[in-house]
Amino acid sequence: MSTSLTPYQRRLFLLLGVATFFEGYDFMALAQILPNLRADLGLSRFGAGVLFAVANAGTVVAWPLVRVADRWGRKRVLVITIGGYTAATLASGLAPDVYTFGAAQFLARVFLIGEWAVSMVYAAEAFPADRRGHVIGVLQAFSSLGAIVCAGVTPLLLQADWGWRTVYFVGVIPLLLLAWARRGLQETERFEQLQRDGGGEPARRSPFAIFHGPHRKRVLQLGLIWFLTYACSNTAISFWKEFAVGDRGFTDGQVGASLTIAAVVSLPLVFGAGKLLDRIGRRKGAVVIFLTTIVGVWLAYTLEGRWALTGALTLGVFGVSAVLPVLNAFNTELFPTETRGEAFAWTNNLLGRPGYVLAPLAVGYVAESHGWGPAVGPTVLGPLLALGLILLWLPETAGKELEETAGG
Image: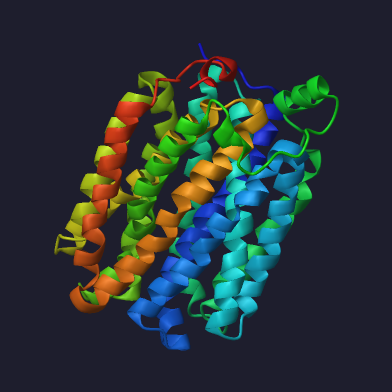
């Protein structure tokens, strides 16, 4: 029988779930408004790729914000990221030109990914070992729920007087409520114990200190796995509306319906991904989830009919959402408390996120000459290689306490 959650753990779970909801909302927002924004601001297909790359560069720059959670604490950094993301979202809606919009989205991703990473650290440190995978998976599913809501409301919001800007204005309101709700947030017991053992706030460490310790190899391994995974997962959904409209002739309404159907149908599967990881293990779960991602994304950019594409998109949406709990579980479980934030910052932000940034540039460049399908389809080679490396390099961590798995 699974360990029961305490009342505070349930409240924390809800708070982190709402916070990760906006990771999905923001991710889907830019993809949903892209054709309208391109028409409004006069962007080419390659320009769209550049815009995504600039915005996604913020996910790399989030590195120091995630890393400092090992010194300042999980709570302080999470509060900072929620406030910063709220301000950047409002600035995105008010942006007068593409340069200001790109800068606002860059800052939004800095704070958004900082919040997401610290939420995953919270999930690893504050919840029971036998439910850790489930919690991490459900938190990521809240991100998918955010994408569903965004996909569902964007066609309506685009008809408002403010057009695509309305998507960001509407998103600010719940963020303000979240900033108020975080008042009851507590620091994790593991971090507080680390402070007690060390006599206060941990000393400042060199940014490269982790490479002089026993976890250097594991950081490089996970960084490469994140990079390969992001090369596909970031482009698969981001450019599907462009593909469906430009290459298959769908209308905005048809695309919105297909994305909503795919997201709604895949959502129960995404919510179950974490439980799958706890039940059959991280490695076997990775096989199921990564193979589904590969098949779904490939078919979503090669099939012809609307309903066939919607079915493939359903697999793709599930896959690109569910690969994250797999890697989040490994990433938080294979490092000790004193370097968990730093390790996440290096593997995900500095080593993995360049794939998140470079892939849209490469896809936009190829799409100019060959269309979106031939540009995005081959990116499935990334998760295929990543799966091979997971099975080759990473140990099973399911059901074990963090103190057991941190040796990697």
